[in-house]
Length: 298
Ligand SMILES: Cc1cc2nc3c(=O)[nH]c(=O)nc-3n(C[C@H](O)[C@H](O)[C@H](O)COP(=O)(O)OP(=O)(O)OC[C@H]3O[C@@H](n4cnc5c(N)ncnc54)[C@H](O)[C@@H]3O)c2cc1C
Image (cartoon, rainbow, N blue to C red):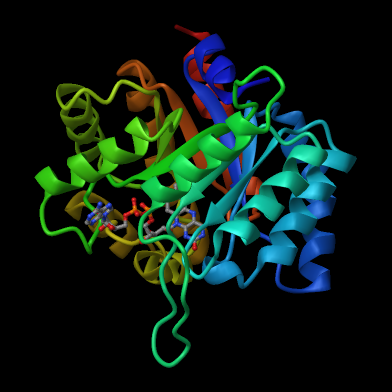
């Protein structure tokens, strides 16, 4: 089913994000819990991609395994830094061949330091335009079979000079043909609501799916800001985590915070919630079940 139809059929949608494990034991661990993730019945799942194609084969492997071994609908992420147009078309052909119906089109971040690379694209909007144009040209009925998602940053992308320019750049991606926006994870819903309202005022009308991630340990709490560009912890959450004595307490605090976020998002008519799983089942299940209970009680 086209992603636009999935997003139109249910509100909110619930979806999951996985990353390709780096080791064989990591793959075994992920596929031991995949069956349990599947039982949550997500509307779709997405699979991250190493910028500059560093985990390209592993992304492909995970997408193929999910498509072949489960009933889940995988949406591969695709970053365009360091890629030329032929490479992108080969990747799209490969996904079309195995029945993938959407991709998440991203710029990615150029490698830092010595490993400079050349590529055909400067920004994600150019990738969206290429995907839509290529898939439309090659489709028998002239309609692209591919849905396209793009990234949004409720707290702002750190490289963007200001939040006004940010919306202009986001609108370029939507004007190029993106079907939905999935946001960077955030911990303060007010940032999301303000971002959503600014998008609507700017004429961006596609669904906006909120990125949510429960903090699961103190190490995770400390590492997360370096993984999630632009994200901040609200003072109340910092205080709550700071007062935790053990990792179990931090996990409970992180899960409770994410549940409160989801309940509030659902009450405020969010289009969808995308859970950053870090491939861990337990905390996601706890938040997911609570969020589903809120939805069915409405
Ligand atoms: C939901 C989500 C999933 C992600 N998944 C991955 C992943 O799988 N792999 C990965 O490597 N990274 C991933 N990222 C990180 C993302 O690739 C980086 O944050 C990257 O820096 C921005 O990507 P983008 O697609 O938003 O780029 P763009 O939309 O191209 O924006 C990048 C920067 O350029 C600016 N810009 C855009 N257009 C113009 C223009 N015309 N003129 C001037 N400036 C412009 C923007 O304001 C921004 O500062 C993800 C991020 C999110 C939110």
